[in-house]
Image: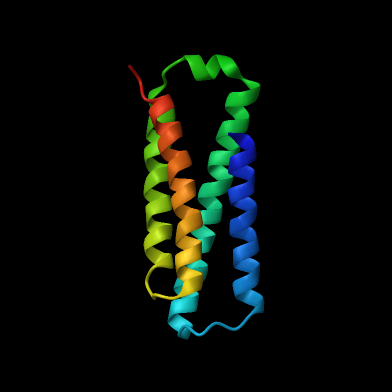
Length: 119
């Protein structure tokens, strides 16, 4: 799970670098919203990667259903959904690819949320 999380995070970073270095056919506002969406996605990626690393090194925390983990997972899902919406403000190929990467990230947040829910 950590490797998948790292690969998606690296893909988001590469996508952000590509958008900064290559001119897009989108409007300036669309590119700016796409960059904001990718920054939110990067924040979400770093948070879920660090969470999976903590759970890997401290497995005792994983066996205790913790309400704070569940609330963190809900917050991560909300931030990631905001990133997806920001990326899809303007319809073009770069925005769809960025949104696809963020959908993969959303699936990782859902997996974490299901494993962290108490009960």
